[in-house]
Length: 157
Length: 157
Image 1 (cartoon, rainbow over the protein chains, first blue to last red):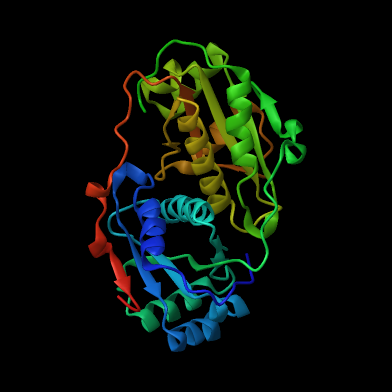
Image 2 (cartoon, chains in turn brown, purple):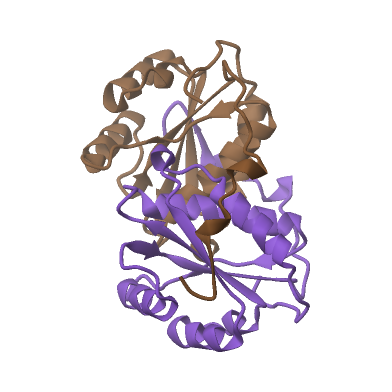
């Protein structure tokens, strides 16, 4: 979802979304993910200046999951799995989200800037920003028509 | 889940699990993930020789998701998100799974060996093996008691 209503998002819904992220499996159960919740408009504007995309300013809430790289060998996997749980929980609550990736080309620069802005300690990895809000349009769910059986290979490629 | 019953897993359940993986969001909607399904005991033994872990031999089915690195800049994220969807779908069907990561220290070697064994083209990334079977023990779901509110930071760290 890239367009959000102005309608406020309940704090308890944000908590449920983060809970889904916290309960996601992590490499050797490291549970080293923490979450920054941004509602302040000025901070959202500053994040927009770093990563672009109008929806970063427009979504009522941004959640930034971060992983302590001193406690996991797989921070990208851990953060990705947690993010997907958060997407699914948000959708279940009627909310919309999108994965705003920090650009790969200059990922470290964007990551550093976000860390500095939000005062996140150096050892935490940031790979994405998750806006949360009521979507302007209802997404069309996937159906079996979208399923591609030819992408399944039996026993070997 | 690391211990599985011998009870057979229906092909239609495997299809539903893969469908959940296929319908996962991917970077710029690349949809570049394909899936190898292994049921052959000899192949499972060979995979065990590469990656270890008894459950690799014992689970009735192994699913190996792979991502075409010529079509995505974020194969690790894409595969992680798809894997989580597959875990959730498997759980919803009463099945158990676990993320068997290819070891990070010699990941490329393990990845190469798996690719050769299953005849997966070079350009596809492999990060994990997903065993599927009926679990010997029912997992205890997370409850609010496991939730750590102190891992949420408001506005900044």
